[in-house]
Image (cartoon, rainbow, N blue to C red):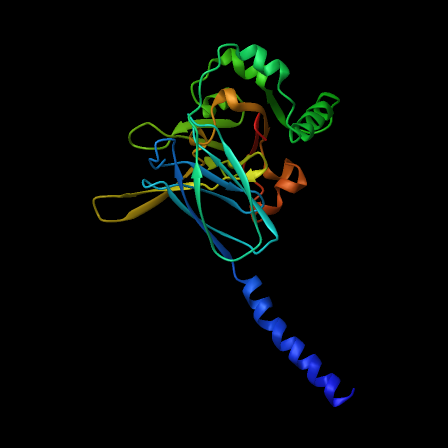
Length: 268
């Protein structure tokens, strides 16, 4: 190789190194979620497809680390508000401000549902449900038509009658409910929950006894803070992660023994 060509190659490689290092580092997305009166919205769910989820704090703020990609999609949800979904193009750390509009009641719910286009992500749900009816698969399916007569006030209530799934109060005030499966070793384990294909983060609750010893308990996913029963288009329940579709096993970190629940909404 000629000296000049070798020099150009080395120079080019040196220029690529900072770019490779920058792309290897996570991108931080910070933001605040506000209502129509410019007030912060706490406990709003922030979902990023392929990455994970978080909830806003008391000041409506959130922070997520995402890999450097050409495009990421943020999905913001809170009970009582219309969901907001938007994309971010590739780049460095980003700050965003998100407006959620209050949900207004509809007078003719049945008419609206009859003309609403079917969400594309429901196709996979319906295909797996059809296969189950033919004897393939081991999932339990719940449709919107089955949910409506329940008159459920919270999303977790939809799963209360499902065999092998246990819905329990998980906070001292009795305001939060967790969804659990049966552990092969006995007892319960917090179910892994996906909302429109995005895995939701679990929460922990710590307590200290009289001797000062602290115990941390996995209280599962606060699904009632993300979605209402009437927003749900379908639910898939797998008693073991090993039985879930392969695309929903990769993020389980080889822990395939507890239940996996896939929830699909009418907004997906």
